[in-house]
Image (cartoon, rainbow, N blue to C red):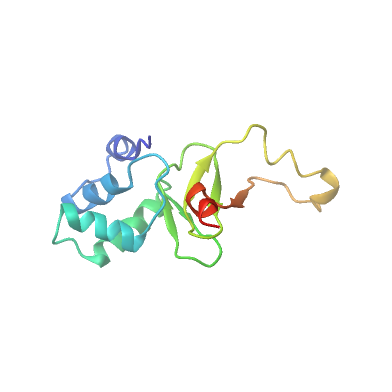
Length: 139
């Protein structure tokens, strides 16, 4: 489970009702909502919340490093609260569902020195693709 709400409290981030509801929507395991999905879920809890407030809050959360923007295959950006735990993503090629995965081993170590072209590597992003169980069952 994401610890987003606690991290925001610990850093003294001002939790207005609008910010709190956006953080609550994002708080959880394997959460990768689009901004529109965040807005729809937030509006169920706080009907007066505006789309602009949701977008602004998401932008702030990304800029302070508490949420990761995830883009896959030209689809809408998704927001991942699992920002402080090393992980990769498993993406369904048909429906776009995303799951967090933590494969063993260091992905930086997988790239041989001869393929680094002198780069000083700092991170690696690996995306695994396939069909989720629902899409595979209907294929």
